[in-house]
Length: 161
Image (cartoon, rainbow, N blue to C red; front, side):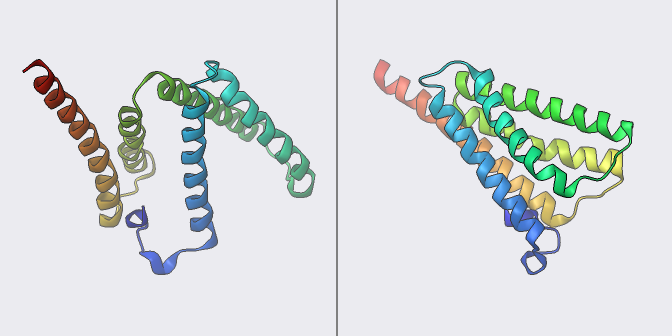
């Protein structure tokens, strides 16, 4: 993950560390969602309750940091929140019904999408570190997928022989 930082590790700030903590806690949330789905098959509630908790906590903080916003900004925020809620719900469904190594590969494809979005919409050319970091993560997931498929096919050949 540290290969993704374009300027190297020497320029890490509190924001970078916060983002890393967010990524780690997001990963932990997905592991917990997979664990919970063994006993409870209602994926919507697995997304609804954490978002309600987040909404409640941020609602308590909001009076201290609120700045007036335009209606357009409010619509963009509501759109983003809705899309994020839907994406998390789909992710929990995927983790419930698919093998974890398949879902991991699909989740890691977001690096490719974000690099393309950055280049097309924001005219950001990715640095070499970013390309290497995203490639390492995606190739590791692809290797895991191919290796797991290879192990299963070899096991089937041994059983049938």
